[in-house]
Image (cartoon, rainbow over all chains, first blue to last red; front, side, top):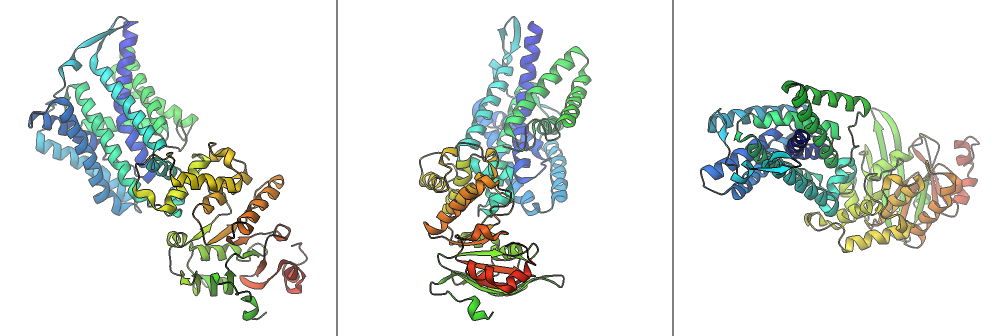
Amino acid sequence: MSTLVLLSLTGLGLGALYFLVASGLSLIFGLADVLNFAHGLFLSVGAYGTWWAADRLGLGFVPAAAVGVGLGALAAVLVELLLIRPLYARPIDQVLVTVGLSLAGVALLQAGFGADPVTFPKPAWTEETTTVLGATVPNDRFLLIGVALAVLALLQLFLHRTRFGLIVRAGVEDRAMVTALGINVRIAFTVVFAIGGAAAALGGVLAGVYYGDVSPGQGTSLLIFAFIVVVIGGMGSVAGSALAAVVVGLVQQFTSYYAAAGVGEASVVLVLAMVLLARPGGLTGRTA
Amino acid sequence: MTAEALTAPTAARPVLRVRGLGWAVGGARIVSGLEFDVAEGEFVAVIGPNGAGKTSLFNLISGLVRPTEGSIELDRADITADPPHRRARRGLGRTFQSSSVFAGLSVLENVRLAAAAHRGSCLRLWRRADSGTAAREAAMGALARVGLSTRAADLAGALSHGDKRKLEIAILLVTEPRLILLDEPMAGVGTADVPALTEVIRTVHREEGRTVLMVEHHMDVLLGLADRVAVMHHGQLLALDTPEKVTADPLVQDAYLGETL
């Protein structure tokens, strides 16, 4: 029983990380049709930004994380404005630019902060444990799950309760029709990039807490699972991403524990294949 | 028929003025030599056999395609070179043959989106979308006028085809258009829904005084609705007169080859 509880909470925590990266990825694809391979870079910017603010500026964890998230959002906006915007009519070039950027980003982080992992400034309480139903659970799991739930709630509020969210949902469904109404959808692209960048950066902060250190390639490896989550959940759907992230996180944890370490990753790909065979559009349709 | 006769009732100032309008693709003339006015508050219907150029005419007026000759004026401003969204801002609203509503949004949200676009309030993006703003009142008003008030909270995708058409008209109304282009609004609508939809269109014209240009395949829908009927054939304007006179026109009867109008 205690193993089940620990595996479930760890799986949910991992799912929380995937969701933070995948939600922005999914919205950006749904609205702007951009497959953003540089999304993992925003995660790394968040993680390194937090480490930098804590280590070099001596800030506490929460203000340092705020700096990291702010830098992630800023990086996303700059990428959209400078690199993606001129290429909206050229999807292949767009993919090339974001792939190139993700490679260049890893190299830049290595040049700036070294190829070795740096120790992440995680708060002391996340290293303690809490006993749940007989299981000794590290506190960072609760932080991950709690933050992801809060981000999910905020995203839903944004999408369903603000005028801008309305434009985003309509744009995900049919961008041309929104333009025909005389609405400038391009502004929405930038804001969705900012939101996605901030969420991914927050994912970077939490990945730092979870793994205990930050390395240049971390964003890229998490991005692969985030892409799988987006495809399973349905492109453009935040709720679908949340559901798929939970499924992927749990499947990965349980199979890794009961089979072997590599089987966790393989079984996630198996889930992906099964979902695509049964529902080619993902678990949810094309709605934000 | 002479050009003067075609452009006759111009006592009220024309909302739409079309002069020498032609469109050719790769040497093939799709429409040519179109000249007519639509006066303020007038309801003009465009009929003609399939392939007569009715939808091409609509695409030219709404700016989806650029004419190869001639000019289009909306409220005396030359819009021939304007892109579609600028024409929309100038007051030209159109529906499409295929239904164009956001299925994943609620009925009210569909109209709100258009209201927000029309009011240019997209800059105040973070305002709550459902707060009691003027845009919401305008949206509810437009829904009331097409008889969809009770469906406001439903998903647009769940509406019947006829109700989707009404929603499209509500979306148009909320943008306060100077000229409404309706492209075969009855297409695909169940026969049971046709009278109600016709009534909505009649209200938009008669009670709100909107200027309407409507493409329709069947004449019977237009009787009692249209002030004048334009008959198109092979990309040209064959006749433009009251529905009664047009139906009696031998040229028009020829064009339809005995097919009932």
